[in-house]
Length: 352
Image 1 (cartoon, one colour):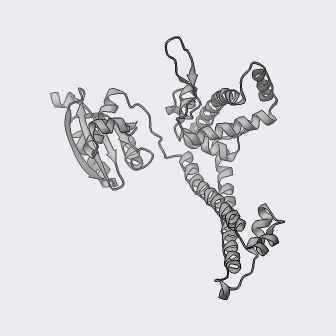
Image 2: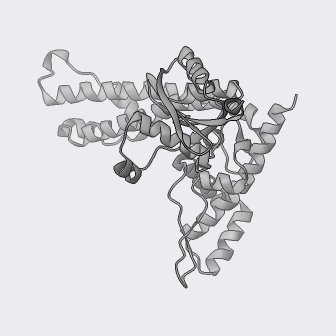
Image 3: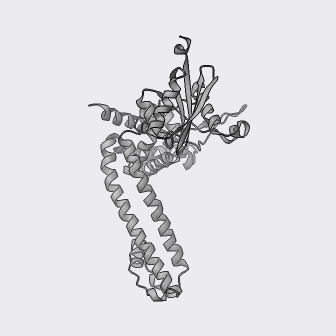
């Protein structure tokens, strides 16, 4: 009877091929630890093993957005409360050491004490689809930027006749002209011919990546507009910005308890830095930096084109605030609108 009434908390250190689990009772006493394969069968074995000790209250899982995503989905489907656990910092690992059992035990105790209380993203709805599409698009954008930089770098050191030939071109015209360059394959030992061949190859790569980005945009725009019409209607919020904010919030934005929680997640909430008679706040450099960049894009657009924001900018400038300080204030105001829009959009999605 005592064993049946007892409640336990689990912790899991996740990896690509295996997961190491630990279980503690309500006082934090270690009851056991064991390793399981990171497969569907392994997830089931892990839960059965946890339940042999007593009723499972919750499970703290490291890396719910990476190696632990599959396990988190399975446990949630089995009505087990899953808590997202941050990996221990370097100072803690220097003091306590590093191993899979130690990390699993730390995850269990963090979930038990309430130190870890974050609700993981469900990753089972349209936002996860948008995130997957954006991964491919972002990779293509980065690769195209790298290719353009390579093209300009190669052209800078190109032989003078070739540089003179391409001197009057820039942007898309330069890329098109490089793609049309002709060269002699039998004379690639000549620097001029080799440079032409390389410029043509890089230009062809840029064209291919541009086509890939265009296709990704065609897929993303209707999906984002259908999932978040209220968010997309906000001033300064385009498909790319809306997609990033959706990916940050996840398929279950109700896990963000308030607009302040969203602001903290986006790195737009000032952090107290007071001491003694000094009462001040400092810039938050944590949070999701991609989401912070999305807020930055919205603010820049509004500062340039929205009358209400321009009036606020003039007012705060007269009060002595710098442009950076004003933008930090505006980001916090934008978070409030974004939070309201996200809740409205997901309420509409969940309403039959």
